[in-house]
Length: 364
Image (cartoon, rainbow, N blue to C red; front, side, top):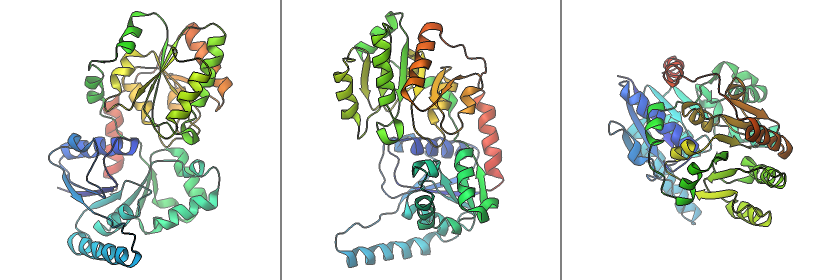
């Protein structure tokens, strides 16, 4: 039985955390012995981990006294090295940004991987120097493997680190399709949402963090303003929250869209809202590999998406792909309201997951 080690920050609600829990639970069922190391043993996904998986905590000291902080963190590193050095067949730093996760993964196994969840050139707005500095800072060259969840991320990394080309592979995130289908059947409690099922108007859904720099929800709100001015009837559900929720709420009030755009907040289980919706919409400037793609595929919902990583999977009979601007989103929403969209490319999540496992087994 191979022993696998994954290091991350915590298991709070988020795309990286969702991907990790789905992955390790599946691998655990396949017989792998798995340990997860958390900088903070917290998060809503802790109770979703299989009871076969070991969870350990690696605390970083943040004392304001610099000398004391450095001494404590040095002692933590020494203890970790003594206990875990090369004790695993494979290790991964799953929280790409985390220095502590990078350290743990590089110590736990000679067969280590840095897991990258974004197109970092887009993340740094085309500033290649900042992107390179980010990867150098987390000691990317010391890993045996560099795993990207999207082709776009891999391509831009190799352009910046051509000497590491042979280390880089693409491995999309897994999806627990059966669980998604089961969770999508849970009851919705908000009366205002339940009322939508009784009305024959299109319902659009956006699920994600409210962060304008990346998610650009203003594009959806501005498109909604134009659609309403043109006399179209529709609703938009926003599931999630973040630093720019107030910005979005203020804009909705300014545009008089309070009866059109509903803010539902963060949901531990967002999947019943897919069931109540007709179309998922993604307006992002950039993504790693959008988990919402897989969620939509499994739950048989068409998508309107901007051209972010791996949008070709949507373009291939599963939705509409548009440019990264308000007018393009407006045009696609208008098209959907008037004519709908019929999915003509079904998604087999079991085959999809098996292909991911085969990819990972080559490096385990």
